[in-house]
Image (cartoon, rainbow, N blue to C red; front, side, top):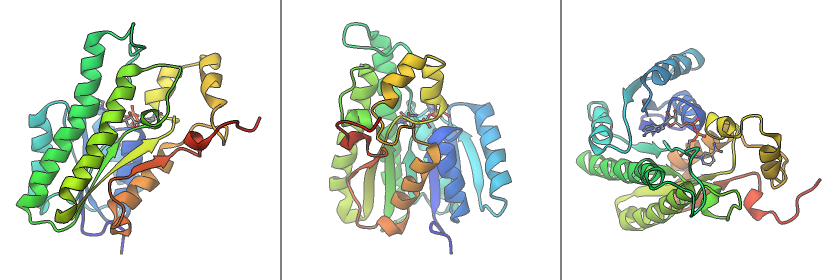
Length: 263
Ligand code: NAD
C-alpha cells in the first residue's frame, strides 16, 4: 500500500521545482494527482515526466490555472469531483519578482502582483478545498501551503513584497488550522530555505557575490533541493501526520537556527 493510496490530490505550481517533485512522490505513493500551473507547455512536459518516472501511476491529469483567479482555482478543485473529491491540496504556486526590492524601491504593481499570486492564490485554494471537503463529506483532509524561511527571519537582501506575502501565508494557514480542526481538515505551512530551483537560481544567475552572500548563512553550506521539500510535503499530506496541524514546517538544513556557521 502506498502512503497516499486512495487519495485525490491537487498541486499548484506543479510544472517545476517543488511542485513537480511533489507530484512525482504523490503519484509513486498511490495518489491520483491533478497538476495545475499557469504555463500550459510546462505542464505538458511535467505530465510526460511523471508518467515516465512513475509508470505505475494512477490518474495523472493537468489543468491550466492562474491561482490569482478564483474561477480558475474553483474549476481545478471541481475537476476532482468526478474522482470522489479532493483529499489533499498543495497550494504551492508562488513568484519572486525581479523588481521586488525594499520599502523605497518596490513598485506598487509588483507588490500587488506578488500578493495576488502568493497570498490570494493560497486563500482561493484553501477556500475551494474546504468547500469540496464538505461537499464530499470528508472526515479528514490535508492542506499544505508554501511559505518560506523569509517569513521567519529577516533578510538584509530585501524582497519586501515576497517576504510580506509569505508571512501572510503562515498567519492564514495557522488560523485556518484552528477554524477547521474539528472538521478533520488539517492546514500546515511549508517553510523552505533557499533552493536549487529556477525560481531562485535564475534570479541569482552567475552573480558569485550574490550567491556567496547567501551560502555563508547555510549550516550545510549548500542550497536545498526540491525533492527534500517534497519529502516533507508527502509526510504532511499523508495520514502519518494526522496530529500535525497549524505548524510552520521548516525544511531548511538548520538555517533558521544558525548563528555562526562553520567555514
Ligand atoms: P519554480 O519557479 O520552480 O516553480 C513555481 C511554479 O509556479 C512554476 O511552474 C510557475 O509556472 C508556477 N506559477 C507561477 N505563477 C503562477 C500562477 N499565477 N498560477 C499558477 N502557477 C503559477 O519555484 P519553486 O522554487 O518550486 O517554488 C515553489 C514555491 O516555493 C513558491 O511558492 C516559492 O515562493 C516557494 N519557495 C521557494 C524557495 C526557493 O528558494 N526556490 C524558497 C522558499 C520558498
